[in-house]
Image 1 (cartoon, rainbow, N blue to C red):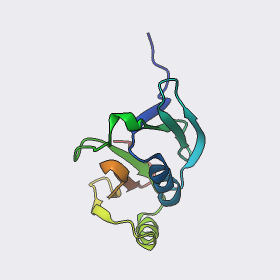
Image 2 (image 1 turned 60 degrees about the vertical axis):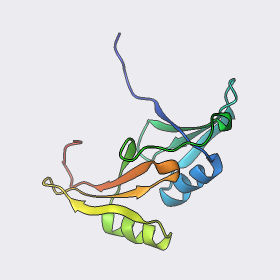
Image 3 (image 1 turned 120 degrees about the vertical axis):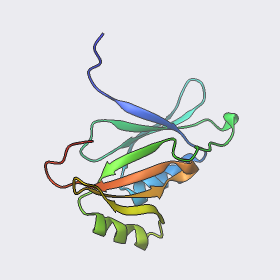
Image 4 (image 1 turned 90 degrees about the vertical axis):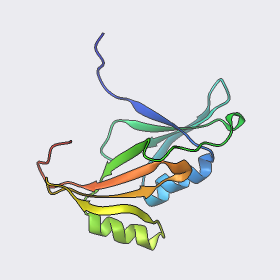
Length: 132
């Protein structure tokens, strides 16, 4: 067997509408599709600019609310300009929970909280910087 690419990552959420609003209004992601699975889960597929991989949000109210443990899961997105990003977040009253921090490679990053305790890392990388 040979895996050929990553298609999507699923994240369980408590409130689908609140989570979609966050990813649309704060990060500018696009909802490609919403549907209900055969098991009754409510699903939404989010498109990230310049990425083929999707984020799949899954709400299954019968299983109760979602609470992600601290430092367990985070999504990392590249941004063009971290200072502009910080100003945009401040104008939307989104709190920065960590950073800004500069790495030895010259990258700078911050963290913000998404609904249900998921962390979001926003990174500005100099041209030619390795992925990790």
